[in-house]
Amino acid sequence: MLDEHKTVRGPATVGADKGYDTHDFIAECRTMNVVPHAAQIINEHRGSAIDARTTRHPGFAISQRIRKRIEEIFGWTKTVGGFAAPASKVEAEPSSPPTWSAPPTTSSGSVGWFPHETARGDPTPVTHRGDRRSTREESYPLDPPRSGIFKQPASAPCWLVYVDDATGRLMELRFVRSESTFDYFESTRSYLGRHGKPVAFYSDKAAIFRVNAKDPKAGDGYTQFGRAMFDLNIDVICANSPAAKGRVERAHQVLQDRLVKELRLRQISDMEAANVFAPEFIADYNRRFGRESQSAHDAHRPLLPHEKLDRVFTWQEDRRLTQNLTLHYRRVMYLIEPSDFARSAAGKYVQVRETNDGDVVIEYTGAALPGRQFVKDARVNQAAIADNKILGPLLAEIQKRQQERHAETLATKRLTLRDEDLMRKGMGQSGLPTRRKRVA
Image (cartoon, rainbow, N blue to C red; front, side, top):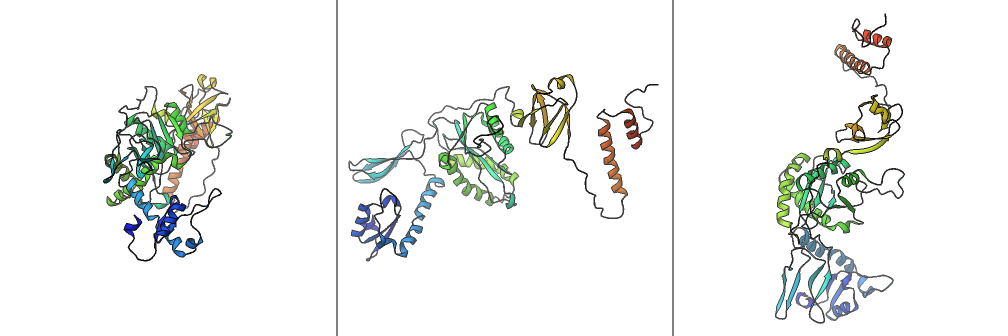
């Protein structure tokens, strides 16, 4: 190949990676009057075949930078061009160039055949990327890259993507404000509603999926996302490195190129419009890059009647209910209304569930405990600044808020008759009957 492409009469240079830093290759290049600019292998086991005669020239460093352009070509063909078929075979014939043929099965394997002849004339098997799952919907890699195409770069949304490990198809794509637990809840809920329950989710070691503390002082060893998947009987597998979940990483290389360009061509610059466009992009992506699985079996499982997603996808924590029927959650004290059922839960652990909207529900043995908030950290509001000297509307609004607070206090039914009468008189309700009969 070097003889065919050498067009200069004098010495030429050839850039290469560390795989070509061998004594035979370097010696053969020099006999052909070609200067080898291969990356050096320098470690404790062996030295480099390239010495200072080559590395001392500035052209060696330039070749090391320029040679990476060939990696860009390979990256484009594997991710954008759609030629990343690892289970391929070379059929070499003596009188014709190598031809590529599809493997006998439609699933990708761990060994690919490449046009490299051995001494026997047979192609040399090269270990390739990890096996795909033979069955569809067995595992889904998860990962959230950022996108810089939206209007607010400081709070740029990211997308959450679910990739089928057997076929490489996108199963869910959603733009979210941040990589939070509730964002994963919403995306997973949308996915489960359309496809059902997979066998496992394959993710990184982010704190959303895994408790990374070696010796956690509290908790049951599950994150909120892990607890929700346990309730649905779905396993969560955490990869040890980005390369281990390469399926979704390679999908991101395509998304960060094609998806961003598609959004710009359609002049989409907000998250809501991007989520509307996502199903159209998923269909086009799967048509271009999706593959058939080796097995036609669908490993999805339907949701069971007792698996209520409204309940599963909530933030759940256990709190001890005091003898005074109070508990603390997120710096707020909750006062449980007295009842025989509430008194039976005194001194025991109850479950606090919080939805994405901030609604808090307290339950004991599956039944709700009615209560209200008592904000411990409440402070007196600072004086409001009036825009002008006309204070009538402002005072009317202040008085309205005061009346509402008085009404909330009266609704507690914990005031004495004297305090109740005083408060009602202050509200201008004197003469109204009280809620308790007076003793004559």
